Picture 1 (cartoon, protein in one colour):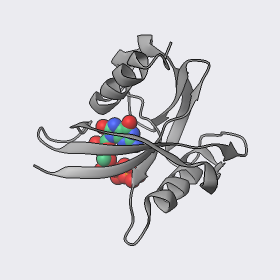
Picture 2 (spheres, protein in one colour):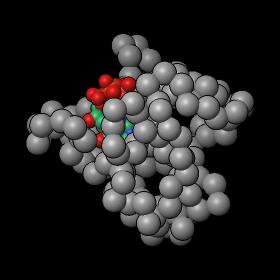
Picture 3 (spheres, protein in one colour):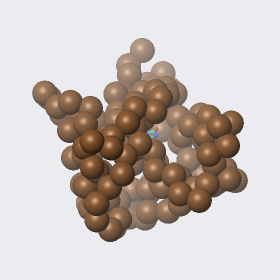
Picture 4 (cartoon, helix red, strand yellow):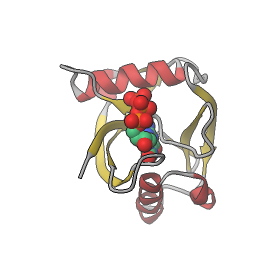
Length: 132
Ligand SMILES: Nc1nc2c([nH]c(=O)n2[C@H]2C[C@H](O)[C@@H](COP(=O)(O)OP(=O)(O)OP(=O)(O)O)O2)c(=O)[nH]1
């Protein structure tokens, strides 16, 4: 089985989770991306979030949350995405950048609009009382 390793940023506010939609996609993703050679989790996360949302995560505030794995959206069956999720505070104003077309705050009722791995994350957050 092929596994795509990704680092993702879970940002919650008022019971909603920050989510993004890339150009040409019809499903929302939790922001994040793949590691480049030699990068630490923190470096990947900070680079991807700055690329996608034009903000800087505050290094000292980055905390591991949990890892989730499921079928990768838009890939052949059996290819899975593993998302190591972190929380963090940030500096700046969130603004869609590079391939991101839309930034939204989703709640549990939006579960049918997200990728398979995000559905698992939505369930997990809901169970913890973190998602409205
Ligand atoms: N960032 C992110 N990716 C997701 C989520 N859910 C989900 O299936 N993915 C999948 C989409 C792709 O099938 C898979 C791997 O992405 P990809 O191989 O297309 O990576 P990419 O070229 O877009 O690279 P990158 O910018 O994300 O690093 O990750 C999610 O919530 N957030």
